[in-house]
Image (cartoon, rainbow, N blue to C red; front, top):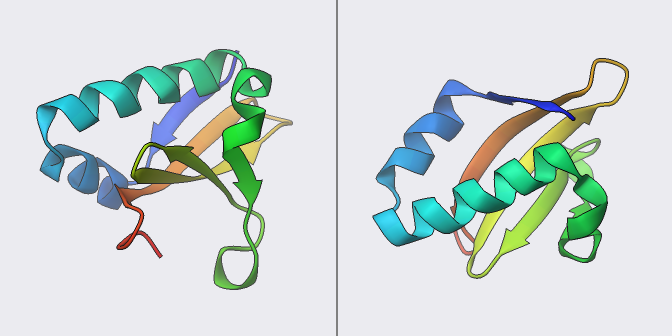
Length: 86
């Protein structure tokens, strides 16, 4: 099981979302930390500025995260609507 860490900017973005979106995203992030392979169809490696990071698609929202396998840590970098997250 991976531990979750949020950047302060990601926490602020999460708090700005409506309650329903927060609930859905929270459930998926918890699932990501327990078993990332379950969500592998919704995870994509990013390129360019975000190289080394991944995105998790959750309905109309995206979660940008980084994985440190050697330390078993998932770092949530950004959370937002798919139009605004990049």
